[in-house]
Length: 470
Image (tube, rainbow, N blue to C red; front, side):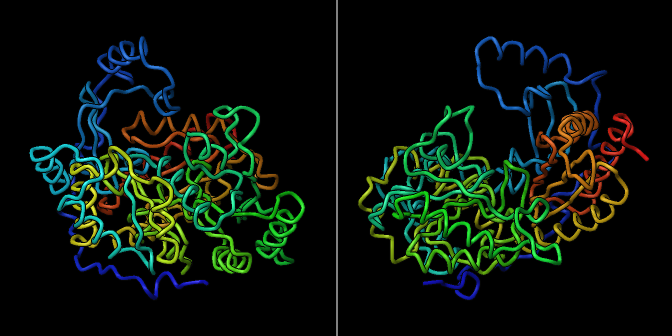
């Protein structure tokens, strides 16, 4: 049965954002003092690290600076170069670096009790109560973890226990983690080999910029996607689908946002077929899009949600949250973990939720969305290589193309723009042909404008460099 996400939301935001708490001197930030980047100390540290470490991320390989400190929406590397943080540590530090309340909460917990497996502690109880208070609808069964992947894996086991079914649908381009079944939810052959685990199936999801099916007016024909799902289930699966697992907004694929009618219709589709709906909100949850859960934008309540990243503002803590009718299934899957509910993690997550409430940061993230959309409004006209721009809260994407008619991706430009903006003092997320941006939701308007100036300037320079300027 469908349950309204927003009408039953219990959390109350009662604070008001104060930009003076996070303002910086824009004459001093960003500032690059090294003759070239990375600087000599960064290069030396990186050389020491790469003698040992393997499997570095794309952002480090493209721009291997070594960071020393962070404060609010700024970061400083070991050579003294100063950056505006426009990635939040890859969608993690929603409240910026070293928020005093979060840091103090972690330090206090670390001085009292490090770990107690899944035994009860006061801070754990307070976090559990606060989490279900802010969650929409009847999302009330909670288990705590230390990584998004672990939370997703637990969600899959819960869905199997709750339904007695064993198969899953997920979507091309979604990202759900890097362990066996989490990887099987996504096409990531470089991690998982040529095949997924049995019982995992992938289907397309509507992308308004690159739709598979459209109506006569050019808009996305969501009904065609649902018809495809129905036919696919009947023809290509055993029909024993436990859950449909999706990111509300695709992160790794490039901040791709669905048409507004997709999730309400998908909710009905799943209800009619007794398929659970799982929202992987590890990236999108806890204020990133201006809501506790991104699914609230579409007034849609999932049966299971996973949260993380911004949940502990940098401390590794995640959660799986289950609707009341399915909460008992969690007891059947050996759900607890060694580290998931440790006092430091609980203190970090509890303090983070309280900061969002006390400082009115959900509202501020929505205000920043308006700012970002206004800044990007003319980019598709101004730049020949910009095909599309989009934002939901502090989650944005800019699609780069060789030709606006064919929409052929321009991967080379993404890498060059990433490096160019980084060299100007913007620490952000690497891209293929889609620029990804996720600034802290505490960011003052003036700092946001400065960061967007850097990106806009970098797009223009790379466009000219590649010969696409008119």
